[in-house]
Length: 504
Image (cartoon, rainbow, N blue to C red; front, side, top):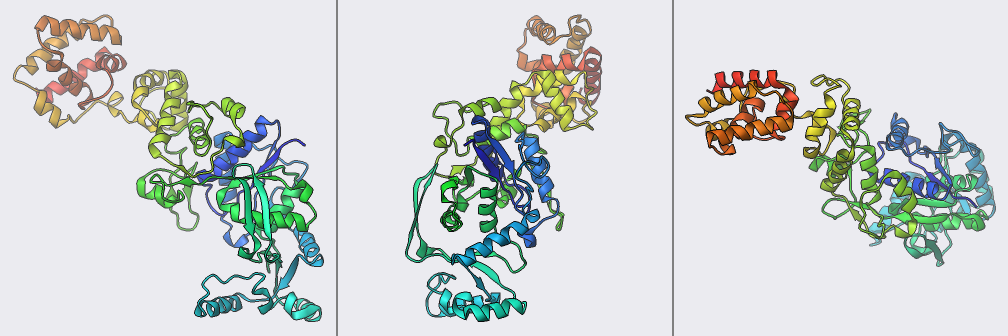
């Protein structure tokens, strides 16, 4: 059977980078094995639905280059791919489970369940749950009998359908990452499969859809591991054990300090994104940062995510998409949590940024900031070539305003330290050298400057920092010859004249 995997996010908010990693690992396995990558929108929880979240998920995957083969927009032989459009399917399976004795109707209200929980707490039992040990003390079809159950349903009484977890049984299954996993059913509760609003919960819809869509591998986050034994039991109860998909539960992405799961709060606190794209909350208007808007390349973002939980078994850290596909395997996914490093994320972006040609980098900058007019498109490659080795993110390439705006202020610390009694005289003489220079390339300018300091028998430190101050207003930056060549002779001379008026 060919590999069929799915990424099944819920449109309850922006897609976390951990979700993108899950999508990536699914995508890479499908591509490596010549299989199919399915996008399924799990929108059965209407109370948590957030307008715009589904479009955000699709746009984020598109930006990352994670293209679904089947999905809400792509279509496919197993659609619809939005669970809210499949809800008629789930009731049939809920009824099948009831008829086979694997599920039951529950009429308890939220208040009644809370009251039971409080009673247990007062009796010293702080972990009460609706399960094999407590269900016979609740209002459900197991305790009310068939006649009363039918009367309540016919009378329109609200109810849920709960799965009937067997008591004192061990559920054993193989996880492709963690090996053999065992759970005793006594720690499991009777999960709701069908809600009173007529919608299935994640558990029923997830299993039914994976079966219907012929999913062969369920690759998802570690937080779903406690749900796996229920899903294993559901496959058994529905008679689908022979086609149960392989499970692979990915390690958590941890905070930079390593103490717990990475959250939006960490990004807000320390100033880094946790979402692929910028997200504006439709209710509060709060804006959360995104990797795209912060100036990351999608290729670098994916490379960073690849290495958060996967080990190639070599020293290689930088992978093209083709290399990711060729080398990826679930066997190399680690069990332990992967600590996120904002510095490492920038490191990946730096490498990708610096690997591009000046023309390609210029194209990326203009696409990132289409309204930028400081430098014309024909001069952008030269600016990118000069700044690439000093940049980590795309905005860094636009942060040197002196390359397109004449300075009006000059770094006081540099001026105070480097401007001496003879500086004005030296700069005036140097201006003559510059005015007479025919080869105004970086190499030509550097050679001229070297000839000047030799002729005047001075060190470069006597004139270099001052000249930089006049040209840029700052005390640091790219190589002097590169700056001068980029500005051109006329602009260099005019900046020297303007600076001398202010500082000389």
